[in-house]
Image 1 (cartoon, one colour):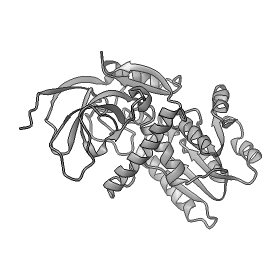
Image 2 (cartoon, helix red, strand yellow):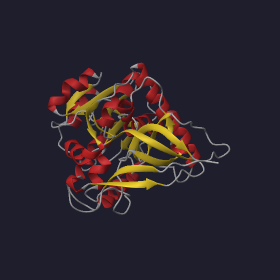
Image 3 (tube, one colour):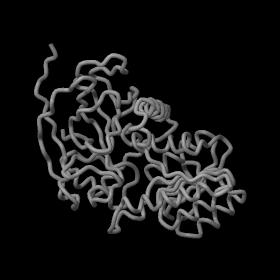
Image 4 (cartoon, helix red, strand yellow):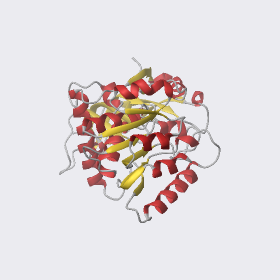
Length: 350
């Protein structure tokens, strides 16, 4: 007989489009985990760009309000539903990571155990949290989308950012030369990671051409907007542009969906031009609905490699500040202030 004690979850709810201060705290009973499900006690979640867009109603495919934000989490398996034959096993007490898209800002979360990725011993929950979304995104863009290899030269825009800094470290660790754009005050930090810094306020295209006259193997662009054309021009024949967002549009009115579709249409058009260059809009969730088992296996493999590098010191986890769950509004406000260096992490209240 599977005994279930009543499990209560404390959650942060985004009720409607609004300021961070509109977030609400809710306590509810979680249903017992069904077959193949797990209750995970959250140890660390975080603020990502997604929540900043969601609170403005501008995220590409967000759920209907009200909902619990939280793009990813790291935690400990607290309770398991009945096992399902042939599925990878997790055990009570295992530390795991999960990509959730929404739902992570809660002290307990009910998840499909197939979506849980093991976190190795010797890595703290907060450190692992900095690399769930950012690590999976960076690894997949480098090695699955752009397929970069040792000796290549690549451009990373926003090289000191959440994804950008992981891209730089992964690329350098694999023998790839990196040109990294960043603000004037972040040039030294970018250089310290082993990249060649370029101030993004200057003529970036001219600077990149001077550093890489033959063009580059890949450009990673999170900004979108007008600058994406310069990114395209930086590529060598056979090179790949990987666009993974439209950061320029966060504060604009209008539809986030339309912005993304415009960008995707432009990339698709470039993709058919006869010069062997490729343009891709990277979506971390692509393939999950169509080929869920393959998606989960790849995610487990990719995050496994990222966490192994974190444990061995091959990548640095950058935690900016840690906020308790009850102060999620302040965490979101701080993440949007432009002063954060590294991940803004949320942990359960003591």
